Length: 295
Image (cartoon, rainbow, N blue to C red):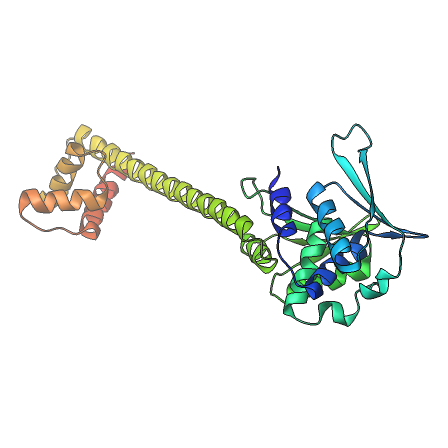
């Protein structure tokens, strides 16, 4: 099962109060229901279909007719179609272009409403994939803007994008997606999401540090090679260096892969005469200036 499916399955098994159940159902109907002489809902998730059936039975004592069909265009997914003949429930569900105020009257009801939107229209990329992405695919612009507003009241930084005749409400930030899962009480999904996210972030940080370390090593080797070439030129021209520069040249030849910091520590230790990295760097600048005359 996909990560989205696992998260929806968890939400479907949460215990809700009657008021919260009505808010969740309201979101499900607003985002998905086709209303004519009857009400039709369709989902590809069997757990979501079971959740809708259970809530309708529990709250309104309605037994929806369920039809299962194979998806079109060679799709292997099954479509679960629920049909409700009694349209009187729409008023109880606060159905309009956006829900009536009582559907989202407090924090718990808003969370239940958002969980219903997620069950019917939401999808989340598995955190193992290359990018973090949560989206809700909605057909009504007013409802899309309303959902985005609810999400942003919790600081989730959602945005709305138009796609042909539909509207996508989406969140890109990993931490915000994790916050949304907490918001709808999908705590198992949160734990999985955070474990993978932290692992990926740690791995990326390790890679960056390794790359940085490798870049430093490459720079050290490049600098040392330039110094060795300068010394080679001076030796070939039989130029006599002063005592300090000769000392630097000898130790560079002896330790060709050492950094300036390492080389200054070695010289200080072996000669019993302390020299700093900047002091050693100054000596090599003088060696370079001499060698440059013969290049």
